[in-house]
Length: 143
Image 1 (cartoon, helix red, strand yellow):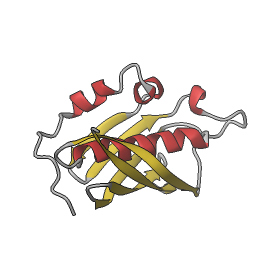
Image 2 (image 1 turned 180 degrees about the horizontal axis):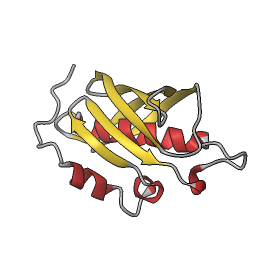
Image 3 (image 1 turned 60 degrees about the vertical axis):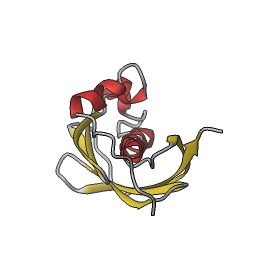
């Protein structure tokens, strides 16, 4: 296991500003907790995030989970790393929602020099798990 960065953890306001004008900001992802190895976020549902059948679109759930894991990855990048990219993701959808807010808790499973693995749980408005998510990130270095 590599030593993670000793850079300061951004504030929640800083994390939320980083998504402005990008997908996280466009769909409304908000971070509610950040520490190395653990990120929490939320997304208030609105009609634009639903599928034509009136239920939450799976891509909205994946966007919340993948964004949360990605922001967490950045907090654990080893010294000298310049970034990361997702190389694999998997989601299991166990439920859905139509309104309210969904939440995500993402946890680091492995934070190495070349890869990171993150797991996330997405919960519906009543707190019930509605999706399980896992992603693998490749850590990038300058050539």
